[in-house]
Image (cartoon, rainbow, N blue to C red; front, side, top):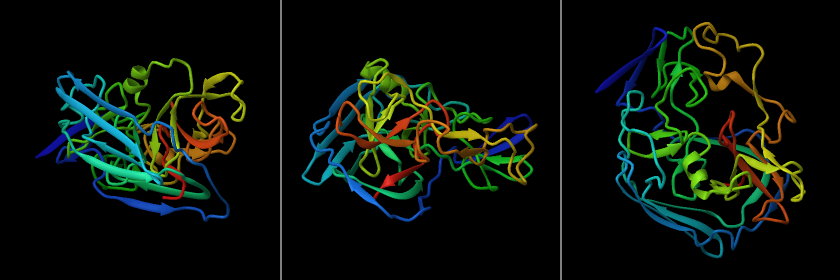
Length: 310
């Protein structure tokens, strides 16, 4: 079944009603020169949740259980969210949330390197929130050079569509999440419903674990990364929209800047974080310091790469 939607006269063809990639890719963009390790043992190793979600789009019990061995942090989840969600299917995301039992493991003692490893696709999520929902910030959607042909679910050109913050509506709810064709509910940005559920206010809030084993925090961090007595503030990523569009980009009059991944550039020192939306510093759970990632209010929203060994 083929669904067609339009935006400003642009045809969008969604084959199978999907909006995210069904393939996996990895790439290393720099080489390792230094390493350091930090144990996460004893931090949320016994986190477990089982909660009936009465949202009409779920209407089932969401489960997630974390455990730790001497070397691994493991998760078993049925992939259902434990907070209120939007309506799925919807006009821009014609997929139904489904239970999907998943078991994954990561390093209990992650190793920080100078390598930057990018990975994408449903089989290689950037990490998992404590409630068992995966982080998959990219999309498979693309446009051709003219910008008149765009497909939210597959490659028709070189210009990669952004899931949130761009010109296209991917049917995300107020949690910055939507559903893949296989029924997997997943986040593209700050998991607002889960953050609200934790109810920590304007404080550093550990919300999940990245694919390399390092922790993920939502929105807030210390003004001085190494000083837990410094004020807490909204953490800013170090990406900005390019002043000049890339060559051959579709016309900005048709698709404004911010529509494509290629519209953004990393500028070291522009914000608080590195190119993987992370930094080293102290946190409430790691008072001696650790490398950690952030879910942020602006691009890249979630880390698009990791600094730890996979």
